[in-house]
Image (cartoon, rainbow, N blue to C red):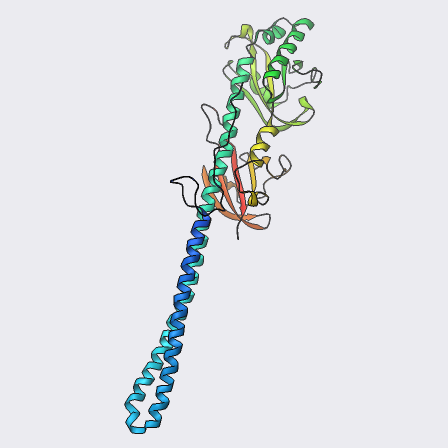
Length: 366
């Protein structure tokens, strides 16, 4: 049985501090600190303004008294004038400092907020695609193993109603143990389905599959160590359900280097895996509705989407090629008319397998 897939805990963006010792501080902690700093500086600048206002009033009163004193107060009048000039310069310096402080704080809030958010979204994107790659690696093992099953080999090497009925029963037993598959189908060399594991649920026997990618790749393989694949699509084999199909050549006597007899295809329930991971991505609940998690191929076509638009449309990012060019990155870009932070990670692969797909997490900013 395939091992259970679990999510690694990833903290949300809304808290004040990271939950695990040694974790990077979250976006909220940076903005809170900057907010406190901004308040302290504004309070200090206001104190300077208050002191300067009092100084200006005192210098004005001093000039009035110096004028009343006549010649005797002339020298004191000069000092009072200098105090008023200095007060004016202090006011200008205070205003300049206030404006500069606001600009720097705003820039720091934006830069640090975007960096922390972007890093977190990249990590979530990587977790999503890594879970998918790890799970799909097992599919390549399954199909290569089951293609050597004696009942499958016999149904193609010595075709008869009895041998194909036995193969169908055997495929059904496998399906009862592996609930991640819709069906298992067996094709002869012409690409015609001759047996399947759930004949009472899916009437695929007799369907022609010679033009399908999964059949063509397995039929062209050089040994039983290779496998074929067809990406996310709505498969006729299972009444249009969203599927991935992995395949392997069935060879004489189950030998990896034996003569090719036909092809075994395993129809994987892609929706259950991908959409579950997209919808259950570790995003803070208050941000979940606005956050979009997607899996795309190299052209940006949507293979999975937490907003439910998979296989219906492209992502709609004008600079998608630039975003997907790096293995892991984040950018700020327009998405559906809204400024968003977009975290991206390319499939890292697991063991000898990788989908080569891309994972993105898109979250509005501002």
